[in-house]
Amino acid sequence: MVNMKAPRCTKDEKVKRIDTVFRLILDGYLRHEIQFYVNNKTSWGIAENTIDWYIHRANDVFAQYSKNNMDNEIGKSIGRLNRIYQKAFSMQDYKTAIQAQKEIIRLLGLDRQDKGNSQEDFKSLSDLMVAFSDEEDKDGDK
Image (cartoon, rainbow, N blue to C red; front, side, top):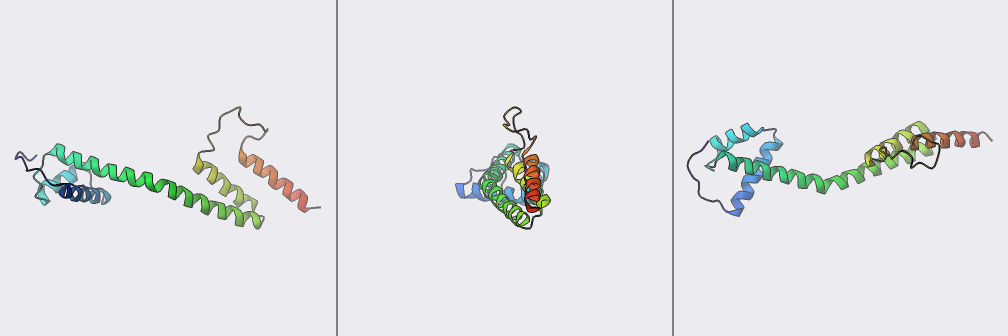
């Protein structure tokens, strides 16, 4: 632990320090390794609790990044799965189509349905899709 009191740093310097800690976390550094790095490889001259503050701020950056990108990534994933579903269904590969739909349902959290809300006798949407594909097979035989 550093005992000397360091002068306050500028806002720009804080941003650079948070970025440094952010990059250390990205590189897999643990708390004690970040503390060692800051104490031995920088001239920051700060106390352990201040290092923890920078770690916390860097984790806030991760959280914000995650929040901003989560909707985009979910959207891309659903789009990709819809495309797989569409191609599989058009090729009458109902097994793959159902798998793609199941993954969409899981991704959206729709598999956690409340009991008693279903208006059909099907246990799940995949049961309904299997029944639908069975109907398609029967229609194709006519």
